Length: 67
Image (cartoon, rainbow, N blue to C red; front, side, top):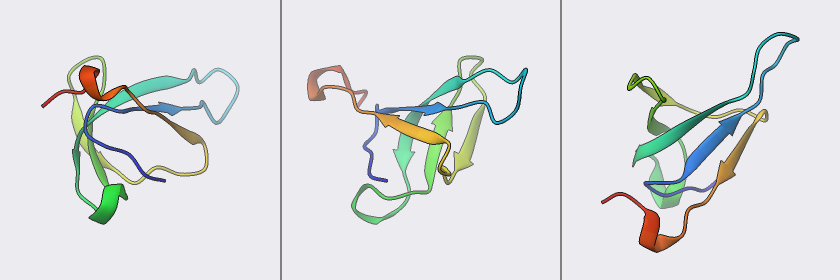
């Protein structure tokens, strides 16, 4: 999984009743765009994440990425 700052991760709910959620990558901590990533959710909470197979990268266009 490769990503850059500003991309979003779609994390699928793993069980019935748990919805999908989206987090924004605010820092790439691995080499060459690899995990782990520092992410921020819609409430502003930040954490470090190494996404699993239930996660999809949604790449943003370069002009829309945060700096």
